[in-house]
Image 1: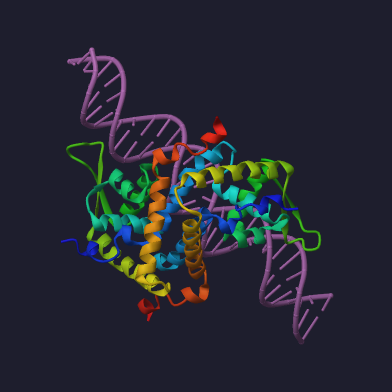
Image 2 (image 1 turned 180 degrees about the vertical axis):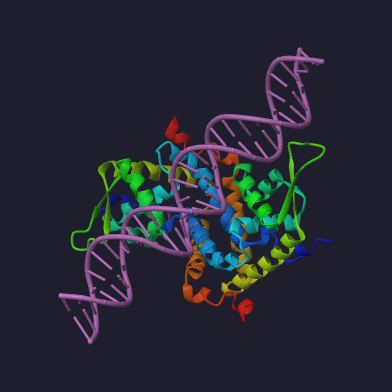
Length: 159
Length: 159
DNA sequence: TCCGCTTCAATCGCGCACGATATAATATAC
DNA sequence: GTATATTATATCGTGCGCGATTGAAGCGGA
C-alpha cells in the first residue's frame, strides 16, 4: 500500500541524492577545519582558483567554479575585507573587475591546502578510485551543465 | 612561478569540487522542472522521504536527508502552507512533530517523480554506470558523515 | 553622432544549510 | 516528588546560490 515507494525512485536509489548528500557531508567535514582559518568552503574554492591563475575577472572565476556575479560579488567583498585579495576595475575595460591574491591570501591558501590533504588522507580511497569517481562525477556535471543536452528534458510532459 | 598550482590540489583534481559542482549542476537542471510544480529541490526530497514512509517526525526526516530541525522546520512550514503536508504534535510525546502528506502532496509527488525520470532519461548513462557511481558517492558520504572516521583529521596540524 | 544591443558587475529577494541558542516536554536522579 | 539532565523542535544570524533586475561600459550600424 505504498505505491510511490515501489518505483525505482527511492531516495537511496537516486544519483542526485547521492551527490546532494555527499556535498553536504563534504561541507560538514571541511567546516571545522576551514573555520580555524576563517574561511568558508566557497571562499576556499575562490582562493584555489586564484592560486591557479591570478588576476582573474569575476566572470573568469565564475567560469571555473560554475558561479555567477550574484554569488561571487558579495563573497569577494568579504575576502577583500579580510585582506585576502584585492579587487580593481580593469583600466582598458571598466566593466570588468580584476581580482588578485594578496601575500596574506596566498599564505592562507597554503595553509588551507594542508587541510585538504589531511582530509584526503583520512578518507580511505586509493588514488585510482578517487580519480575514477571524480572523472565520472565531472562528466555527469558537464552533461547537466550542457544547455543542448538539457533542452529536451521534460519535453514529453509539455507537448 | 606558480608553486601553488604545481601540487595535486588543482580544482579539477579535487573530488570535493567534482561533488560540489555536480550538485550545483543537478540543482540547475532540476530547477526549471520543479519550478513548474512550485517546489524547490530540498522540498522535493522531503516529499520523497514522506512518500517512502509517511507520518515521520522531523528528526526521522532529517535522518533520511542528513538535515536538522533548523533547516527542516521552516521548509516544512512552507510545504504545509502550500497544502502539501500536515504537521501535528505527537499525542504521546508532545516534543515530537509528526508530518504526513496530504492527498494534494501525494499527487504532487507523483508529478515530481515524472520530472526525475525524464531527467534521468536525458543523461546518457547506463543503469549499471549510475548504480556504481551512486554507490561510490554514498560510501564516500558515509565516511565523511562518520564522526569516528573524521575525528583524526587535522590532528597532525594540532599536535 | 546617435541609437540600440550586448556585456559585466552589482543589487535585491528568497530559500536553503548550519552553528548557536532557546523553549518546552520528557526522562532520570536523588 | 522535586531538581537535574536529556531530547525534540523552533528561532536567530550569517553565508551561499540563483532568478530577476539594474546600471554602467563597450560595440554595432545607419
